[in-house]
Structure formats: structure tokens, C-alpha cells
Length: 71
Image (cartoon, rainbow, N blue to C red):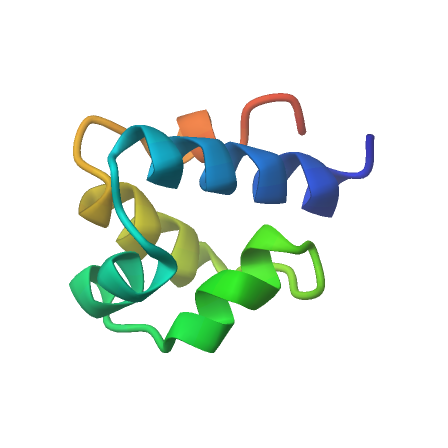
């Protein structure tokens, strides 16, 4: 699995487990909903700052959880 695909799957799963929509997650971390969609579809790779913002917004999810299976 490509790194971007693994990140996308991890993000999608963790967001669903948190019971959040893409729009709710985007609002929590200061991103646009389309950015969440692009990340979850592996169209775009996240910056380090984005990974940290996402993990903080997903409570009890560390950046390494989102990178699981990549390194």
C-alpha cells in the first residue's frame, strides 16, 4: 500500500470512529471540508502541520496513529 493510501485509510477510519463528518472534522482543525475529502481519497498528501492538527482534533489519536502502516 502506498503511504498516501495508508494515511487516507487511517484518517477515514479514525474520523468515522469519532463519529464526525468531514465537515465537523474540518471545522475542528481549521481546514476546509474539501481538504479532508482530498486527504481521505489519497488525492493530496498532508503537511506535517496538518497531521498534527488532525490528530489533535480527533481526540485520543496521535500523529503516529494516522501514520500507522506507512513507516
